[in-house]
Image (cartoon, rainbow, N blue to C red; front, side, top):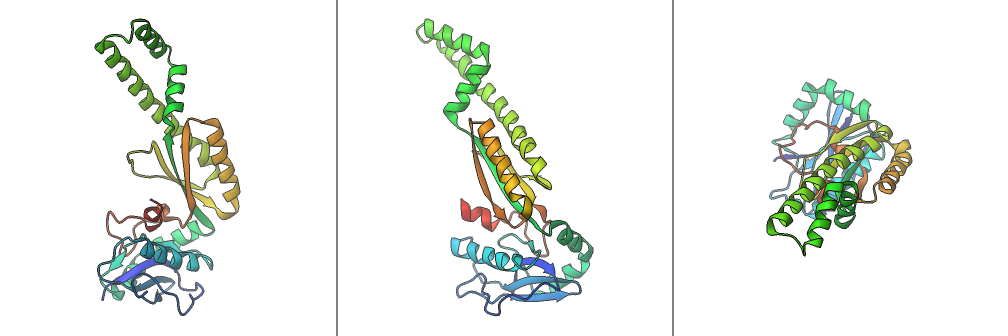
Length: 256
């Protein structure tokens, strides 16, 4: 049977509760596979697993339970290996890498920040900051709306100005928050967001990071800023022993 992988930790990590259940219906019992100094938190992989809320929460709950007792390298939802031996073999092969990651991520959490423009507010900002757009808008108004070509040209100018503002604001999001973080990981571009950035934060520094987020909001009232976290540091762990390319993060999917 295939093996579902939740995360990787040190073999000395405190044991999970004996009745800890994971993904599947009924929930598959979570067990520990040890290979030298490392261990993997796994269960049997159910057939036909889909990223439904119940399964996503089960994955997250295992990581939360384990993470409360020590550092865990989280695997993304849907990480499946052919069998237990495959998991332990990769742990043995990549022991130095995983030990380094465990040391680097100990005491750390992740916050994912997504930002988008508040449409009316950003248009006001663009108008206020671009004298050429203001002049053409006024000229069209005085001309009863202007010709089709005039309106088209004005629209193109506004779109270009908004796109330039998106680039500027995306840089501001990262530059404003990265001093309060230990590391930064820029996520893939997606429609609807001008910034999608994950920040690795010391647990003890979470309050300072969230204060920086509020300062970002106050300094950029034309931005809508979404905070997702604290999360296990998914964005700062390389793919594990079974993580397939393109697998979606369980926590992220559960929020959307």
